[in-house]
Length: 493
Image (cartoon, rainbow, N blue to C red; front, top):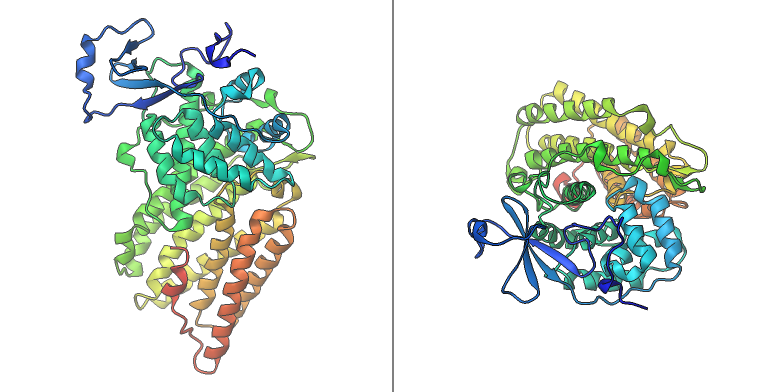
């Protein structure tokens, strides 16, 4: 069989004039302060495709816009990854995962794959296999281990498909995604994904891919920072990507798969877009209240509420703007829906904002009326999250869930624990613990069809038991808990 890397692309191929999507090519963005200044390029003889061969062996310079340059290097042959039932796994991925997490270009991926899987990068193909295996009984540990090793080996010459593969792989619930996030952010910066590609000389579909990947990375970083309690890697000053629009998504409802257990393309696109806009609010919540310096400040509630109110208004507007089609209650028979992860993310954002307010209760003597109002609002958030969990159907539970979902469920439960731990009233505390028990039970029952929930169940069982022991010790002395709030919240901050 001929080496596909040496064959010419078909006349109608989507890969022509792309920036590093072709086999054995990678790209690296050249910054303004490096040892190569863009100013000298005006004297270089670029060909009609915007390329110029460098003195460096097997490298060339490509000008994609007047002020953006890429060094292209040919890749060595990459060892193929052989996974059992490869074509079935690819089909399964595009039916179940891709609609709700559309960071790949389906037609480009399949164009390469149908010629030969060797046109795809190991990370890009392997990650699709690994995540699709979540819907099979096959153990993917060996494949994951191989992919993680490869991911750190390709940092010098990454391709956009490597970045896509890394983001897909990080959706696996048992992958420690935070350890990879900084690495993947640096890969993206190398590829110029954090830059505005609006006027680059690349195909329109590739511009859409870069924007979708960019915002997938943005979400990965911000939600990772939230659930792991770590500083974000992405600074908005170095983020110059235009907002996503509908035309950045090449697929429509006409591309829906008719097979049972498939997800809807159009709904998945809307889920992704609303998740991006929600993440922008979450990023501001983290910047306002959960940076290292913000956590060290001892604030009174009178300082926190004015800062929290605009964010609360934005969250309220966000949920009000959701179209009816993204309601948890709107499902289609024999169809999967990833809308659950979107609503879970919303409740996590609400809870995170209220945790910032909760911190002030242990730091100051709060006005009793304000305390009552803020506690009532906080309890209402948990009750809403509980009702959401109870409304989930099999079509939600069996669908794709975003990587942060497991920890988000735990965070919501921990929020209820904090409310109980800071309560001054026996009846209120008992009511909260009763609702927490109902929440745990709901997750435990649902986890039979959604394994990602088991982490939250285990964590909340242990925390609830610890709380109950503390309540018993304190009941003879005072209605107020002596359990240190900061010690408990440090688990997730």
